[in-house]
Image (cartoon, rainbow, N blue to C red; front, top):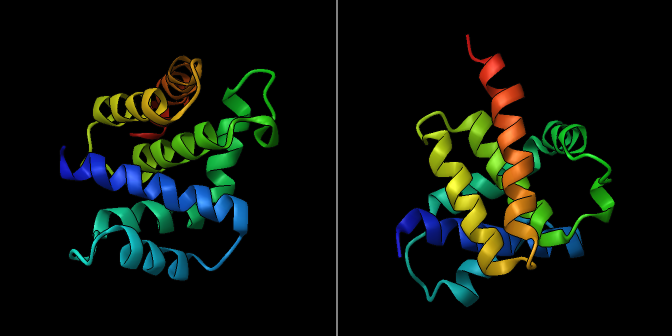
Length: 139
């Protein structure tokens, strides 16, 4: 499995925990590293995703609410919401990652960890955000 895909999966797990527990993100990342990463080296991309999503969460959540028709953020599946937040963070703040890669990875995470409808739901929202919000903000 590609390193970044593994980083995205573990970032999703940490974001899931943080969404439920509201605990300290640094502590959650350290605990994940200690208990689930098998003492391997620190994963900078996982940390970037988690901390970046948290830092820009208000902006990201506004985009999700704006482009998800008839869905309030608090009514979304927690996994779908986490995947959307990570992908939008990548689209906005990781220009080195091609948007197509970000969208594909998000859909795959939805297929693997979400519900039966997650992949389509995630793809629809991210496609609209990419086409209507992200591309227009790039000069």
